Length: 557
Image (cartoon, rainbow, N blue to C red):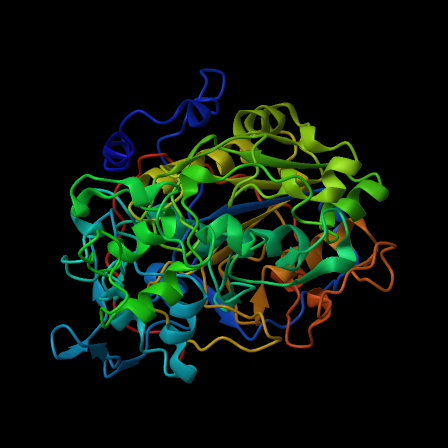
């Protein structure tokens, strides 16, 4: 853990991971600055582009880049023209409860590139939203074990000041602001589920998050946005047995008694040990800590479980239509425990290993279709981008260091994303590509917009989203209500003639509660494009850009 944390604290101008360096060869030198200047942003209520949906087939390559754990307001809360942090007379008008200080907390600029965030599973999501008041963020982050990261860094310590009310702007993330000004910023993109990373990634590739009672049987699946396919026994061990097997024979100091993951989590969340060394069930905070920790599964114990995800995913439809796809992974580490916090040992992120950011190897369809090999290292994505051999659909996920998931350095994440986009822009496929850049969940950071309710699973909180394409509208802010379901909808409209992941029509029925792409509230990303315009030239950016200008409070409320 300590070595991993030291890496996270490294500067973005330092040496990047080998997979990132794969895109920085001498035949494609990194340009020191943008090749063209961004235009001032425009804003509208997202009236349709003049061509409607007819021009969507000009897009032959869709790329979804999914980073980690940032709310919209934490990255674009002061972006001109966006629905940002509320203001009055040029000052922020938000002040939410801060119980530890006995006061209220206001938004503030945070110059730090390393943050702690807050808890981000389903329980904190509901408490952050608080019936639409959107005022639980600081309270949640001040709970013992309430940071959104683990490790030895100060920001991850429960005693450090909360940073969930902090926001960044072009001073810390200049390239992201440049992309927003040059292309399209979606300011009402919501996580598809009100929970953490694993269910979000499941929704990204399948439009659902569930748990299946019978391996490979889609009819046995039921909605589950917390455990995301895990069984209780895989998470907490046998009920009522917090100690390891044979623990009754333990004769060492009670304070050093080994515990199962559930017991470890209880201690991490402030439950004291009793006389025998077990978590004290009479402690006042025991019930609340137990409720939270019952979702915890120590990441170091994760094992591949074949056919865990038996319901139908998007790759099934793509395979049947002979549409190529790839899921590209920056192999390294991932941070989350199964409760959205990081109070456990990190687990490796590998191409062939099912994990919270890499769920496709556990989908029955991927195995049955013989497409496990489509999950590849990100170096293959960069090579394909250079060669003009990108698949029709690509999903790209990072490792912990480049993920922006606290406590990862956000400059490292921005450099990684910029390198991916530069590789596409320099390659032959740029003229027919749409890149959707987003973040998987809010990471415990403040956002002021209450999410719409489309079903029992979501939506979750608002996250940043940028659309980058030679056909993307210039400097456009899209105010449509969107979620990751809109990515699937765009892919289905582009490559599948509008066929949906629909139990009634896809030939592989499952009991999902609804067809998310057909939700009446869901907007259409095609409105972010103008297919009549001359394709835009590339806008390659530096991996180590200088800070941009400071922003000021204000936006559409």
